[in-house]
Length: 115
Image (tube, rainbow, N blue to C red; front, top):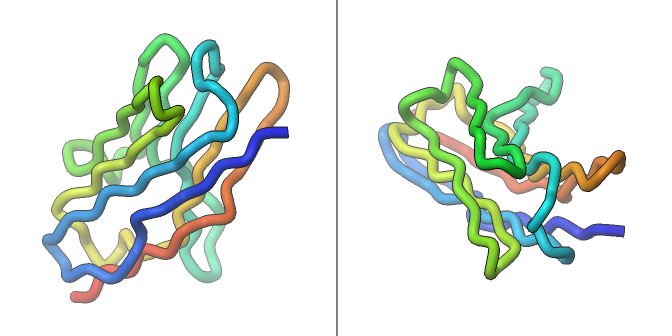
């Protein structure tokens, strides 16, 4: 079993920045994929950004150029730097990791962008 612990959410004004962190309880060396999804009230959970074990990043069109995913192997942590935040970025952000055939999710962290 792998635990994912998110941090860094909060309230920010439109145009501001936040950095989310997701610490894994297991080494992220050799991981298939790790990244972030988000779910706004009344909507489905959508991909925000993911990174493969080989380092390839994938972003939702709505965040390209504003968000950046990165990782720190030593800390077993993946980050999501969010810049130029908009009110439509308001959601619960979930960390996701795929080890082998198993999927893991964090508990979620709230991001609220005020206009």
